[in-house]
Image 1 (tube, one colour):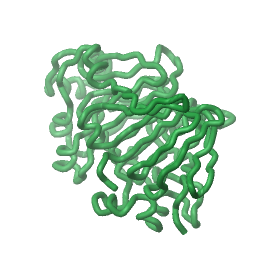
Image 2: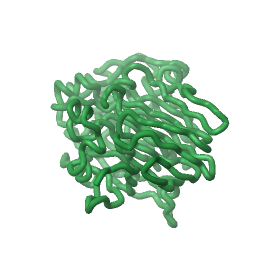
Image 3: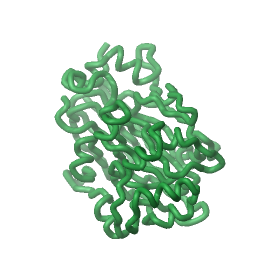
Image 4: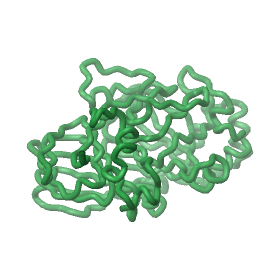
Length: 361
């Protein structure tokens, strides 16, 4: 058997200490959408989620429509590694996905946090990956205030200042130090390692990131849950963990300019457009994100496996091996060996494509 077709990814909901998921449920076509402690859907994942007690969960391995008896993407990769990942990729990265893609919908403000960069992870976390993230906001909802994100310190602060506020559990003071940016659907941001940030309430996004669950939280409380210092600091202690933060002060204009990713038009015709999200050189070293818009008929060939989120429309993917129907709310992994194929929209398609960095075939 050859894996020469799009692999359909089924909902893979992951427990988190915060609540959300109403817009995610709607996107997935649930009849009774609601907010729960399963606000994330890990749609391109071989990563074990880090739980509140420090243990790892296999529930975050992406579930798939069964193929040859295999029910998650890790099992399928084990059976058909070269078909899905490609021989060159395996030599460079092994048999795990080197990106992680999620659907995430927050009903509350998440704790103020940052993620490590690669050198910090190698030194302290026994990993070659940090947790850079690209956010593509799909939808928003007003819960208590207009949807927003917090990005970057807006004034000069020191590690000592932050540690004092952490020890005092002074969330109001911590948040007051941050730039508050209102957001709307189709806004895009690159969350560089170290950048202090938080997703505000009512924000539903596609998040493409490095394949880890490393988060350093400078707030212990999230909703009704209070996390331990060990959990907040990845068991590193506050002195080391706070070294991961970027203490650079930014104005709100600088934040938007520096961390708002540029949608660069790379293809345009009367049958569709392709945009590449440019978040700078660090993002390019971690992953790529494309946005296919107003697609009636576009031909593509990827140089690696790819994650697809169908965010709008209805149609088919067609190749020499057949036709495969797709529609809004569905998610897929395109295997590396799929080859050239076309996206044909019965209703104009909008698709977010997440890919590994270039040069892995």
